[in-house]
Image (cartoon, rainbow, N blue to C red):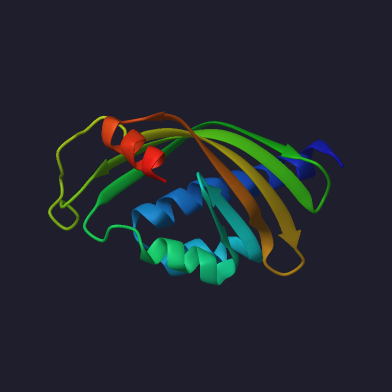
Length: 151
């Protein structure tokens, strides 16, 4: 694979990562699902959400009145071949309950800092898609640590 093709594949995967964060933050779940393969799996601590139906159920359970911003950084994509790639990134999640629709909300410390380990596949028609995302919590606020311990 030449450098131009590799860079194009890397950029497409980067756009998936940033696009998914933005779609979640905007509560645009239809757009979020378009970024996933039909059998994609989102693995968050203690739970796997499989396929579009599992992902949609997970998104439907998110708090409706929360302002949330996922700030993705330290992103590195590795293209394995023309149809598979992986990525690693950090994400700081800023959240404030009860303020959606009443912006600007009060500035709070990030609720979480997580590690993303992503795997992508390239569909012949739809292009690059998430196949799997493993979310590992590195840092969590007091309330979030209690929720993680409770399961």
